[in-house]
Figure (cartoon, rainbow, N blue to C red):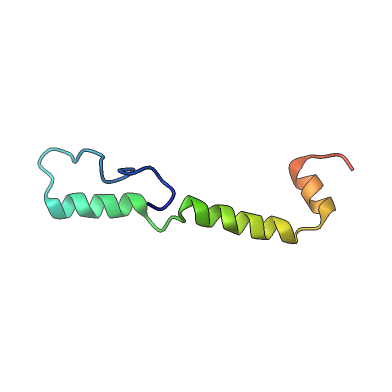
Length: 64
């Protein structure tokens, strides 16, 4: 598991008449080069931790 529900891509029914290789290719294409959710969350935490407070306030619309 990489932070998405089991079967997120693999349990999607294959179109009728598609070969096994076609199904595999379609599933890989659906996954793409995406970042798994825990990695994305960690990256955001690291980036936000480096921003000065005034930039965070502006980003989130919080008055000073």
